[in-house]
Length: 221
Image (cartoon, rainbow, N blue to C red; front, side):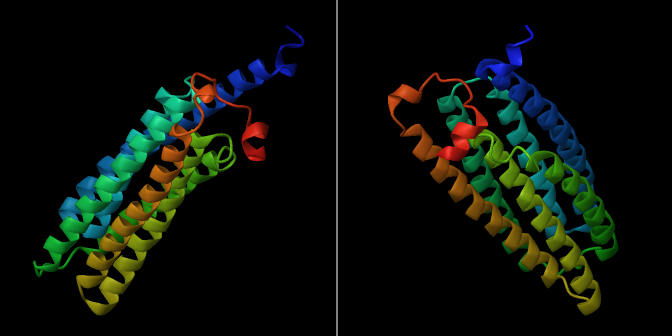
């Protein structure tokens, strides 16, 4: 037992435990913020807040996928990453459609609510980003998860920008533009995740069934 953590098997097990702990924390944060931002977005008639809320929901599901494949093979992880990418793409398209509809409806969003809730979301996502940053190169699963967290911060800043410029110009267009920009960010990230996952799924059959690789071997690839 004293030598257990000197072998690769024990290191991999310890890594999975750390991953699971981090993923459960960020999953809970994103699920809570989805409820808060979703309700605020509906009340404030804000495309940007609704887009950010959908982002939170997508991330909560992404983290659930990530927990599901923690102890599974590289191929399982690649399949989960592919599912994440497809889901991100679907969210992006949904938000683009919503932004297009809002562009035809002359209704001014509540910029005060946007600013307050957007600031709260930024604080929450900064915490998630810090938790996930150290694990971003551990494997494909954690890499795609960290990418979602990074995009969240960009989206949060966009919501705050929309609130500020919307208040300054007394216009609904900053909200619509930021909502559409978040959607495009979803789509760009989705393409990258789908590409990585597809490449992993096309890897030699010898990799199927192999447990989570050691971080050093992944960085060496």
